[in-house]
Length: 344
Image 1 (cartoon, one colour):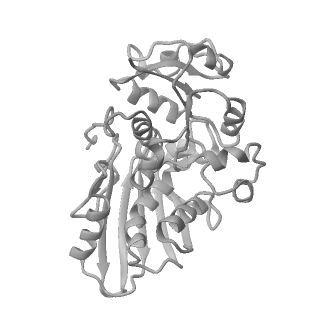
Image 2 (cartoon, rainbow, N blue to C red):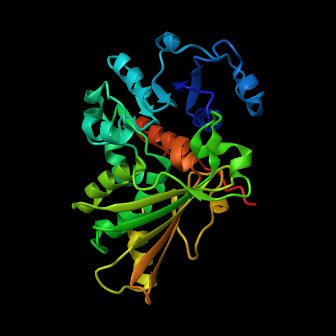
Image 3 (cartoon, rainbow, N blue to C red):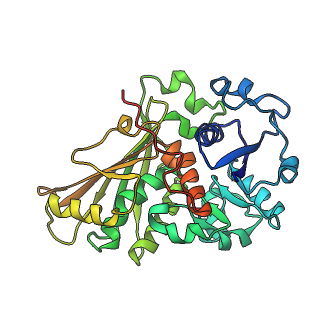
């Protein structure tokens, strides 16, 4: 029998990507999609690309329990998801939250970086960070998953092998990331207006971007020591994709073959991580759940350079959420995610 799925917040980019992926998943059915602002409208009227694929009416969040879902995806903004998790804490369904509300180590850390009160700190202790490549065994038994942020996914996967093997200094790691405009969400803002994005390129969130602490806390767990990350995101004039260029100083000189061996060993059981022979581009992973990684050593500067690319809406959000769902229900990890990249 197929598992019944609810998607809360189905009108945004991550919600519509979940619907696109799950509509072809053989082991689940989408029982209910919600939107408080567009309740009663047809989903395919809001997202015309879903016509003939997901022609169902958008419902209210208050009707979720009526559909008896086995799992709920929360494609809601930060600060809103925690209200849902608290409200439905005693429900039988599992939850995968795509916001940042349960990713960090404590309510205090969350409040410092997100500048808002956390109303359900109990959930933080229950949540498992949803990176299958690092925490797959814990995800299998979890009832609440904190899906990773898009920038952290590219950075964590790029750095984890080096830190786990104590190959590099952890006290200053540089993550320089570029993202497409869908990372800003579907709501119109000045930052993602065509006139501001087209033929333009800019940095933002200098020094205090909230994804910095997420990267550090997870990589602290990987390395067993405190990490310090200098993270700077940039906005690209493209719709989707993240390319992170990562710089780390090794304890000693290392050749490229040895680097490649570290990554291949670490990700030997990771079906969506590809260790590349040359620096990848965002089109190499577009529309897929892949993370492509290339690592090289610069003898002149004594630095390791890592290039890590993902599709921010899939491996950085909805795709890894489906991957987590597969692990939670005992499905094949790649089920419903075996897409070939769209290139060009």
